Image 1: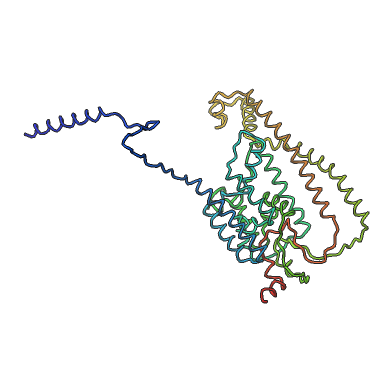
Image 2: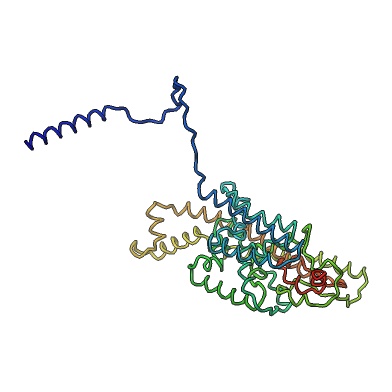
Length: 430
């Protein structure tokens, strides 16, 4: 009896399987069939990819944070909203987004896109780069105040105000420009994104990374406790650009609406030394003498640019040595000279010979790389000479100030000086 039931079940399964196999496969036809019964196809709903959604959130947060800072510092003269923005930026852009929404690193993407048409820069990266510059052109360095997670982190942990001596600060203020020019050279040659590679805070936000960079970030944070924003003032290449745009911004931060009473409290409160005290022109030189001195500096400026160009060209071979193609050619030539066995070769050499690499073709590519480095290093050196010359000229300009004035290029719109001004306190009490 059991054998009969088993045979019946197998027979039924075989017939059912053959019937289903005879049915046509389901297909998505195009164009779709036109039904005479009036059947309406359901509408297609496409989900927004997570990365597009997060990009929109990132840009919205960027604009919101800078707008709040501009409103608080330029219109209301309040520091509390700036601190709220700083805490929010560290939490969101820093630890939640892992420091990846980075206007500083976007410098490299933009520079590479300008010289290499094959590189397609993402629009989100371009927006992250341009938006803070637009705000700086309108309202000053409101991005640095608290929107930038690097600056915000330094802002929140600062408890002391030991000022860097002015001559040393003037010298260190040239470092961001040199760093910027080097980053442009390495990015435009497709050799390395040095800003991202040597980011001191990314390891802190990601809770891990290379030990040397984590140590560097920790050192900068410890220094930030005792002095104002050492990374922003003496290292950040994007801060140099923002300072340049802030010099010609439409609206700038003002300490007080009323007339200044020269109490010196605001300058003591400014931890980035961005407030210049009143002073007289002690030299008392005549206007024609001052004009002749400025013209002399302008004559010397081309010679400084030429000297910088020569220095950059001389260093180009050293810079080119960091390129992976140049290093690979050096390893290939060294291995051929020493006649190393395949077992003793490095991974790079094994990969090169494994894919049938041609030494002649590699040599041609290396020549092209070295020529790029010579061209871009020469231009970067000339720009460095011009920047040094302009900085020296600015230090030598003698002008009188009757009241305390904000150096718009150095001011990071933190709002610390507002609460120390007696005129602001009197206006609030009224």
